[in-house]
Length: 264
Image (tube, rainbow, N blue to C red):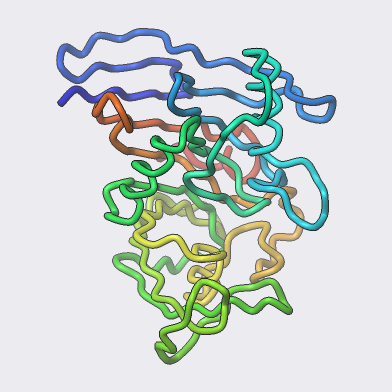
């Protein structure tokens, strides 16, 4: 199986069969008046891979604020002059303050096949985070999480209540944490997400005593950090029709606290 590797930092694609490097079609597009620099990392007839900015919704909600899904539906409709509604399915969601890579399916078949990979845990999701702690706990981390609708938070539960996604009970949350570097009071970690629960990474790290920098909702004391220091950094999956293994990696922003580290 051929593997394609897309690196937004070095703007290269590596075909693992012959190590040939090719420049991908990574573009910065103006998608609305308020969003002039969204990166389209990859586009074909079946899917889009985009770099979501911080503080932008993945999907529309009661606020009526702009969201990735609606903006790209409009962009595709105008770009290809499509009549009627445009299909664009969310394969995974990111919390509003989280930035980084997102996959959107352009057909229902692609959405179904990519969602199946997520259910089978062959769709790999890797995050980078800067946490407020020098004592980093690593390895496989497991909790039971309950969605608190009133507080709009995920709460650690002591028992498995075998609930559903509506938040009426707890769900098992699993992730693997690797320590990359520590500078002063901050540490850089890598998270391999095994399950995809509401606010999972934020709640689990806070429960371990190492909240994400800039995450005041979960107890971070680093109020001077403007954006949540959490990035959807790398995605790996099988293309829904071509059956090629695809790997995408985001560029780390050149801003505090990311600029304190180099061990990516």
